[in-house]
Length: 78
Image (cartoon, rainbow, N blue to C red; front, side, top):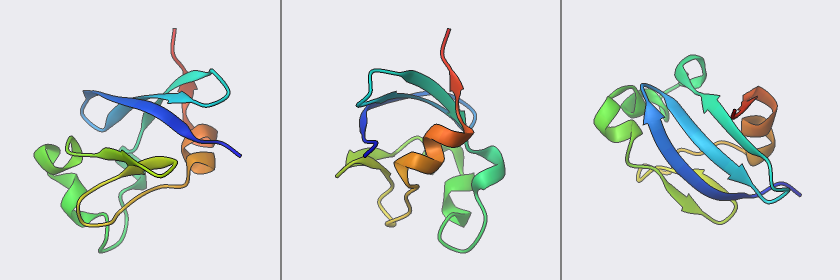
């Protein structure tokens, strides 16, 4: 089961993630912010306010993404 161990805002809608399997990847969520729950995250200040809760990143409004989804759409950090 994938979990996010740490997360760091990079720029725009990009976050660097460290997964519990030791892999560090960068995810760009620009094209994933669909629907009412994710609408507030289009504001850069709100987007940057994520926290790690349970095993993934979450925002104050309850929006989150499954760690498996984040892993799948992300790229290895060089």
